[in-house]
Length: 152
Image 1 (cartoon, helix red, strand yellow):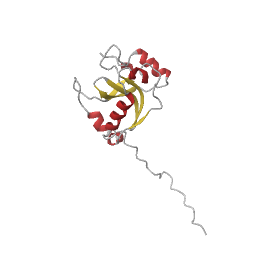
Image 2: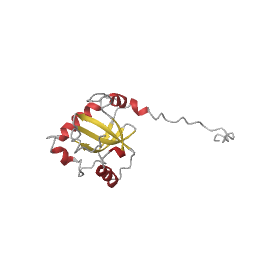
Image 3: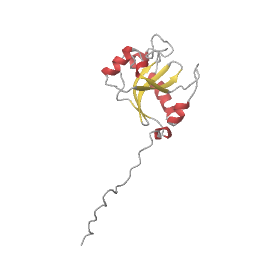
C-alpha cells in the first residue's frame, strides 16, 4: 500500500525569500555580443579606423575585467575627474542619433552601462545581473564632437 495523502492545513504555505538585488556585485562579469550593433555608427568599422586590432584590444580589456567582481568594476576610479570609470548612464544622456539607433535595434533599457577600456574608448551595454549585453563601442570618447555621449 502507498502512503496516505495528507492535505495541507489552510493558510500554511512555504515562504519564499526574494533574491538579493545586489547579489550580482559579488559575481564576475560575463559578456554577450548578440545585441551588438556591428553596422551602426559606433560599430566595428568605426573602431577599426581608430584602433588597428580592435578585436584584440577589446578581448584583452574584457579578459582583465573578468578577474574582477562587479563591485570592483564599479569602484574602479581614475580619469581626469573624481568618480568611477565604469558606471550606468541614463539613456537620455546619449546623443539623439544614438537614442534613435537604440530604438531601431529594440534596445529599450532606461540606462546603459559604460565600461572604460582606455582613455578614449568605451563599451556600452545593458547589464542584466552579472551579464553585460554589449550594444556598441565608442572609440571617440575623448573627442566630444564624435562621441556617442552628450557631455554636459
